[in-house]
Image 1 (tube, rainbow, N blue to C red):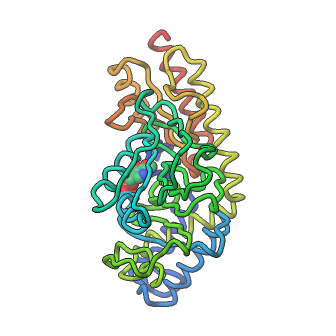
Image 2 (cartoon, protein in one colour; image 1 turned 120 degrees about the vertical axis):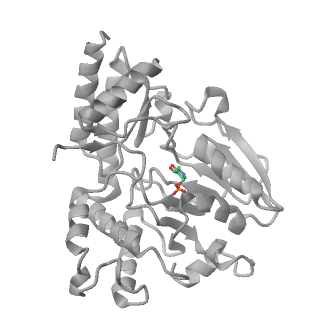
Image 3 (cartoon, protein in one colour; image 1 turned 60 degrees about the vertical axis):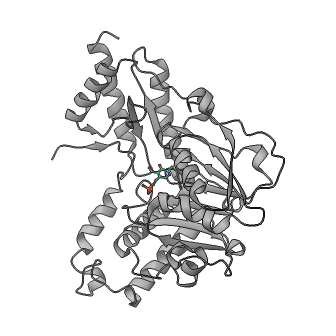
Length: 361
Ligand code: PLP
């Protein structure tokens, strides 16, 4: 089969060696005679596998002991609701940074939770989300401030946390850049990430939460309660065994490759190559301002919707697949997650140069 480079924003490319290992273990996991999809979540085969996955994630992200690590279901979207349900207390005021589409989905869900006042404390609407919002000095202490670290659709990313959020309890959505660069877990009260971009298959969501934030007096249905999920080690009901297993293999792969620092180096190299080309091209243009550019999701346009469509179709034929931008913004988007190879970016640029010449750019 011809080489394919998958630029999808998610579900996204996995390390090739991990896919091969999954293939080899699919019929009999650890010589048990059972597929990984058949093993009981009450067996030591599962609990050992889950414990190892957690331990490796702790190493990779340097997660301190006072944080719980949960492997939940429901995607990033369920976290939009679980965060306010579990963490909004005290004065019942929560703050959100409106940095784009997914931040807005998080805000909408928080607004549906009764008895909570949701303030949008900063927004990048005025620049059409091509910048990160300016966060002003905040007058009060919020129960938490919600921040989307990487805006998957718009292609903006916080390389550093905003100064004015230093004394607030931060909740970070890292769905599309978890382990793409080093963040300090201790700067957050809670971090969440759907797996299907930088971790593994869809179906599992990582939640990292400071234990002291969990309130066992809070009356919530069990599946929506961090404290009840933590008490049962994420196996309150049947966990997504297969997704956790593949995530565990990806964590091992990440450690073997050199961990988050090595991923950050590779991601910076890949992104720099593409941004440099985009900035020098007379046909293609990257709309995001330089200081806000994402390492993992890089939108670009020609400025002509018909030409964009032709580019996407021609690229697809050349094995450069899933370059179509999100339907809400159009254009193109190259997602360069941890497992995406450097040579895929080189191939894309070679293709873009040929395309540019062919249309007389
Ligand atoms: N948050 C971010 C930053 C995302 O990119 C996405 C999906 O792309 C989500 C949340 C929603 O994730 P899920 O589909 O896992 O609910």
